[in-house]
Image 1: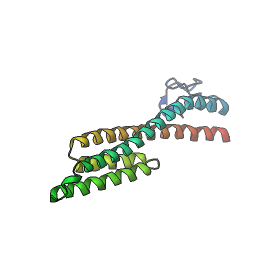
Image 2: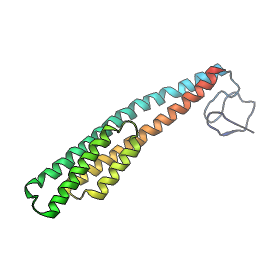
Image 3: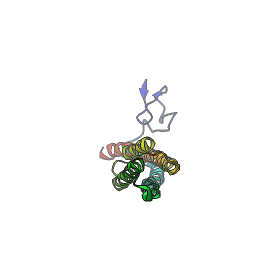
Image 4: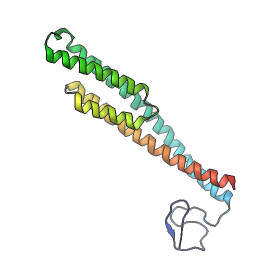
Length: 167
């Protein structure tokens, strides 16, 4: 029993020209296989455009988290003579700077940086505005994961298309 090249499921009918599960032309020419993969790549490209839009929103969410951290710190700027408030102020400003840096480098490693920002916000932020930061960064994690999934799927299809285009 042979497995389909596209969906990797066992094809019980070896004489059938296309896979009963995904429609891949198992007995077709390389050109037929290339056309099948091209048609499968079109919705993936649309998913990729949507994922990139979400990724931009997630990056702006990281910048918004930085702004919220700075606003949270500015609330206590008049009471810096108390050591606990000074520590809170310094920590919150440092988190704002970190969120700003994460937003700047977000495009390269979006999922890792969004998870890092979320973990930092859960650990260090303990105010009402912190809940907004956590929600924004959770959205960023979801957008980054969606982007990585769409990119992986499209890259896999493109690699298979190159295999059939070279033959």
